[in-house]
Length: 323
Image 1 (cartoon, one colour):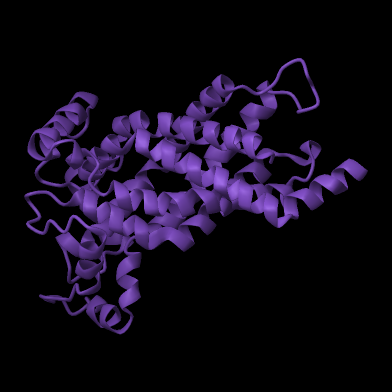
Image 2: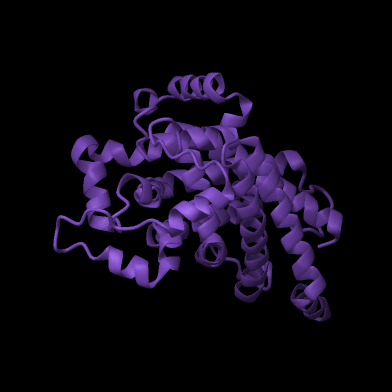
């Protein structure tokens, strides 16, 4: 009983929370850096950038797209928008893992109270909390990654992207039902939340399934910490993280495609606030259900190592920092 109380006090301690967040932030940055080139290619495919649609759908196409980016812009082109990614991912990952530790403690203070439903809820809530606080930086990152010669608006800087989004105006309203301009002019901050609803809803299956898989597999294959026969190792963390990432990506991928389309809406249709219905139709009509899974193979290639590295570094960082 006393050990449970001391553990609870420790997890509520500010030093614990800060160290947990620091471990998560570093884990997120390292994981994103490993897969940054694939991330940019995937965004170009998901958002239907005309320069790269001829490559969409296969792993070989992803490598050819990456090769074209490299030949055109060098290694810097493969990491276009990555500085904004790091600015976003550190607070995003820090808040996500920190929130997960806290929510996990309140929902599952002991291993006996761990259930798959509670694991899912803890993951979903932590993901939603982190998205709420860091979403505008995600829009900046996607915009920077989307710019190519086709867009003709290569604002390859955080300040340039901010100015472009903030000054986007309705230019041609041909349909009386379109009134997004009024809201954009009255509430400019809304421009930085394009696709937020799709992201928030998509985060429920992504973070929920990711942490559910992580918690279930660890409980299944790794014994409690007081069992000295088998201990968690980086290899075990990598393997469990990889499986968790693959399952989560499959469950949430259609939402990711939808939100990418919404996020680049200021470039493709600056006079519109793209809604769920028209975004879904724009994907479904030309491509059917396959349109919601364009770039999924690249998603696996990206998310599996990214999630594996992220969970592993997070666990390693917590061990190093004594949490």
